[in-house]
Amino acid sequence: MAWLQRAWLQRGLIARLLWPLSLLYGVLAGCRRALYRFGIQPVERIGVPVIVVGNVVAGGSGKTPVVMAIVRHLNARGITAGVVSRGYGRSTDDCREVFDDSDPDKVGDEPALIRRSTHAPVFVARQRAAAARALLARHPAIQVIVSDDGLQHWALARDVEICVFDDRGTGNGWLLPAGPLRERWPRSCDLILHTGRHPAFAGFGARRMLADHALQSDGTAIALSSLSGRHLIAVAAIAKPDAFFQMLREAGLSLAQCIALPDHDDFHHWTSPPNNGSHTLICTEKDAVKLWRTAPAALAVPLVFEPAPAFFAALDAKLSSLDGHQAA
Image 1: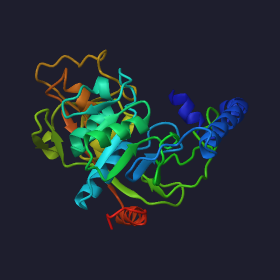
Image 2: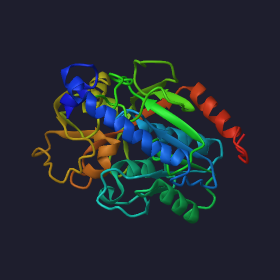
Image 3: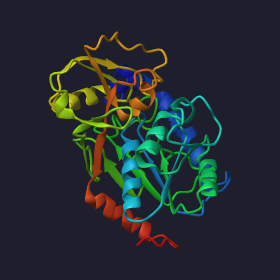
């Protein structure tokens, strides 16, 4: 669907042909939102503050690194946080907890990564309110719930909304399928965070770079600089694989081959190039939770994602202003 992503960046012929469908999409989306706004469909409020990290643009924009950064920030402040997610791409549709050894196929690769990276309690369910209820029942000490995606999941009441954007901004500004927007923009939200290098409009920025090390499947860290000169094959099944490959090159690594797979690929049908000890596979942390099952020698390079301090200050202020919240 790369051609459609490109079409969404401008109001060209393809976008204009799809524009009538976007009007219908807008009506349907507006009606659905109105059902919750006017109480026709119930909105469930959980007993703790809920932070929703989402986007109004279709496709990956870096929400999961934002979720992990927020969880680590809250934990550093002594606030116990848990995470709920739909678990996009998983083979199951029940409500379940994610553990360090959970099968990514059954819980989703992003929830598996969040759990392993932050060690926070994580639940997945088709309905995020159900995941939140189950999380609090299992972990009653949770003080804040962070929802990975779900900005348009109106059934779960939220206290803080964070809209995440990458360098695409809002694209051509049209709704799906003529443009990338899931809902009209601008719309009210509490915080705007840009994960790219060239923000399209005002909001908080972030520093995004690769760590100075890679991880083996047993958790052992290897200096990235030590990989210089190796025959490296980079593989990525993320929204923007070329960005990962470029970051590896900027870190001084020479890539013999780059393999881009569809986002959330489960690697079941992908075969690693024959290896007689001559090459090393290198991938993202998100891909490693799946790739290590069949290629345990692969190396995963963590992403360092650091929102601006002003973003966390604004988030803390939002949480502190909530009635009954004692995190100030």
